[in-house]
Amino acid sequence: MISKNIKAKLAGGSAIRKMFEEGNRLKAIYGEDKVFDFSIGNPDLEPPHEVAEALVDLAVNPTPGMHGYMSNSGYESTRSIIAKKRSEESGVEVTSDAICMTVGAAAAMNDVLHSLLDPGDEVIVLCPYFMEYNNYVDNHGGKIVKVATGDDFIPDIKKIDEAITSRTKAIIINSPNNPSGVIYPAELLKGLNDLLKSKDHVIHVISDEPYIDLVYDGATVPAALSYIDNLVICFSWSKSLSLPGERIGYTLVSPRNADYEDLTGAIVLSNRTLGSVNAPAIWQKVIEKSLYAKVDVANYEHRRNLLYSNIVDAGFDAVKPGGALYIFMNTPKGMSDADFAAACAKYNLLLVPGKSFSGEGYCRLAFCVSEKTIRGSREAFFKVAEDLGIEHRTAL
Image 1 (cartoon, rainbow, N blue to C red):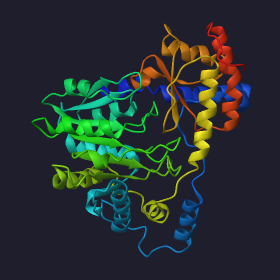
Image 2: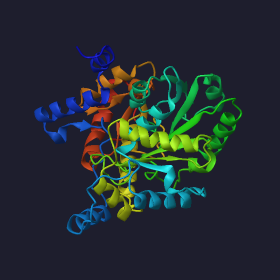
Image 3: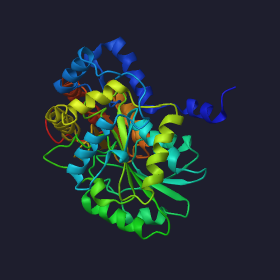
């Protein structure tokens, strides 16, 4: 018999995956062009040409021993170039010892939490948040403590302070945020650091950063490394290089972290003992050659604008995201997110109820889908609004 814990999680399932499977079912019935599936954040842009060129070059001209075992922290050459880039961006001198190459950001988060948590330790999360944090914390015996954000999805330092106890070991931040797309301002990061420095024990900030290169309207993401002392970064190239299937990322411990020596060593040990052993060798080398490349961010910005217009023109409300790949739209007043998602599904418009992200009263839509899908969905948004008695802001 499988564990009771896993059995309960299987019964709960994933709302995102369920909607994704429903999308596949509907496409088989109605045709792909009649289904508007915004459920899953699977980047549809191809990786930039630098990635393809690096991969071909490495396949044709492999470095001797490139596919063999290495340090569990990854290649020194890869970690050094990442450290150089992070130093340039933050003004904080980072060395290769601060970095451990991982199998994506999910493995990075698990490595960090495994290194930090004793059973019963608490991890603060800021609602709404990526629901897999629940599993990552539970994997290592920790307890999630939820803190609400404001209507603009910006965290409230006072509420964070009220949630801190003697068992608080870490707080997870995610900017740009999944699901809201909000970018946390520098003032917030500084205020958070001041708060945590006032406490009588070390509280680590785990900065989950897969979307820091996907920002719009000329915005920039303040470098958490510049503002927060007891910081650990978890990064992935899944979004910035469109490589979600390749699982390549890293952890970075701030040189100002009070537990720097212990934590850097613990993360490397966790990386090995949790089963990853090391990040994929060839993808570390690809990253070396394409570190400064990015996907076509302007393309995503264009699609964000189209989808946002569909939503607000039909009469609905949403905070326009400054980054990431999602719009977190308000559900109509007095209507649950589940009921609204069901109303949308009548027109093959698939979105994920906000409850999955601890954001009741909202639904998440991923705009990393084809422009054709976004344009085709406009009529569906208007029809849903008409069914619910919501007045359009503009003509169809």
